[in-house]
Length: 163
Image (cartoon, rainbow, N blue to C red; front, side, top):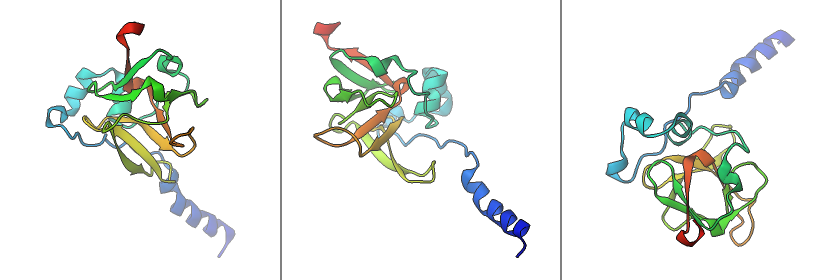
């Protein structure tokens, strides 16, 4: 087979894998009160939060003020206000996104994500299904997990004594 034909065949095979794909919608809400239409989500969220929470986008690293948040408190889903992480589980991963070694009990759901061809574990808010980020196995003890979160998908509520 001529070299040009081999190259054309390989290009035809691999281009669909490398081409940008439309983002999938967020996971389904477990709570019927949070099964909102796309228009309702757009009205409720900022454009950046909508892109991350509902279209599984990713914000630029080091762009969220929550990456530097060090007060005691709780990080909530920016979509439905469900508490997701305690500040006690937050650490500086050096990645540019707020990172946690453990979520609060019954706060998140997970699914496998193949958007970068290699499978990753995506996690989302259990209640509204909003995309939060991905979990990796390179975090600190005791869990060894790194829940790498988009800051725009979170809100922070300081403990009353720290406000």
